[in-house]
Image 1 (cartoon, chains in turn cyan, green):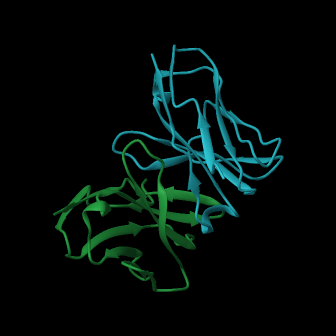
Image 2 (cartoon, chains in turn purple, brown):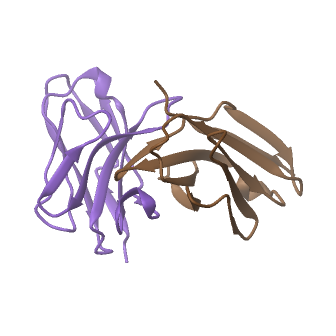
Length: 113
Length: 110
């Protein structure tokens, strides 16, 4: 099993550009989520999904879109990148939400100039 | 307003001694608490968890204690090993959402 994979590992964008961060898991987990981690901060929940076709907002959803068309994939879209979105992004999956162990991907380091 | 607080940004202990990492929370709706460990340039990895209906959970060298009346939990690592050096995050669950603390950098000196 590959676990949770994220692509790309690094990305540099200009303000106003859009892009999609990819996340996939091969553990047949129903729950998937996206977090961002900023220096000196913990991980903050952006969006999450409890199953295919169902998504909901987390703590910091503004500027981001998600969709969940399959169990395996949970892409995160930046609509119009801003310098405030410079961060490390982690995708995670688990059997059933926060009460279960979440498996995290290796992260995507995004810089917005 | 921070709902999960880890007030010690860093902790240094000697190999073989006990490491105690603390976490406080404010939201009474949290029903599950988890500890994650993170090495640089990697994603966090799960360490141990505890349900709000329990006050202790043990897994090998790791024990988590929960004091609901004080809204406080702690992670004990005994004995500490140099490989335990990492950032430790406390996290709390409510309604499918995890809230993380800012983390504590643990350094275990040989």
